Amino acid sequence: MQRILDIGHNDLRLFFKSKTAYVWLFLIPTAFVYFLGFAARGPDDPSNRQPPVLIDNKDTNFLSRALLEEMNAQGMWVVDPTNAAKAARELHIPADFTARILNGQKTRLPFLRREGAGEADGAMLELRLTRALIGLNGHLLEAIARDGTAANLTEEDLRAIRDAPNPVNLNSHFGGRKPVPSGFNFSLPGNLVMYLMLNLLIFGGTSMAASRRNGILKRLTTSGASRLEIVVGKIYGNALLGGAQIIYFLLLGKFVFHVNLGANLPGVILLLLILAWVAGALGVLAGSCLPSEDRVVPICVLTSLLMGALGGCWWPLEVAPPVFKTIALCFPTGWALAGLNQLISFGAGIQAALLPMAVLLGFGAAANFLAVRFFRN
Image (cartoon, rainbow, N blue to C red):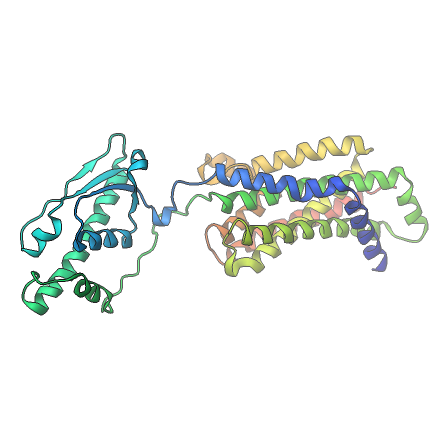
């Protein structure tokens, strides 16, 4: 056991002595997370979509302000005139809006369609505007029921009615399919999976090839270390390197990119550690099968990029044809990302990631067996 720990710790020490190691381990993946996070941003949260509306409010009295507050409570995104081109609909509040309502007169609110706006956004805005008007009318009816008239209603009276405890609560939630992962919720797991695979394949492969070229593997075998101890020690060093990258990116995602890890953090860490073990074993296997470092690097880079692309690290598989979802499950990257999306983007519990973890354990066991089988000094 001590030989395994010594081999792993020594490999990790040698890796961190190189300045370029920090660039590939931390700097370049961080840049990709940042830029892909902005490129993959969705227009809205599908569970709380907020189409923009332009408000032309000519009334300066309190009922127009109350209506705007009700609209805001309904999730309507009001844009200012400088961003009018974004608006899906346009609402006009006349100058006598408050006066007519307090006098008990009917008031019209022109609700106009903007050129090029989608019908779905317009329908959602119309629904939310209706709910806002119902809410405002409900407060006015309470004032009339209490005082017999709304003519003497003041802003303070209306606010007191609005702030009173509501005897009925409505709990609504998104009832559609699972939302497509977007923004940093997609870019952080995707890039972490891909660069974890890339770095550990290269590091594990080049470490094995360099140790063979320098005669280190022969010295280890003559010193009494078994083939199994050498391979497991190399994989252990790889896993330590992956652990350092995992900790860095989880801290970055939590405190810089504000990725919602929440109560699923233990499951995320466990899944990523299993992936680090799988990638480390594949790297040692590559170093055992390939004769020199010159061949290890390009083959490992090509392999990891291919697994990243087909595994869903470059784009959400939720928007891809079904055949790509099947292909992704042929690679450990596809299973890892499927589990991470369940835990991060879909908010599922750790039980939803148990199957991806089990499959990754199978990949790791096979890679470990083959790495020991094809080891040569």
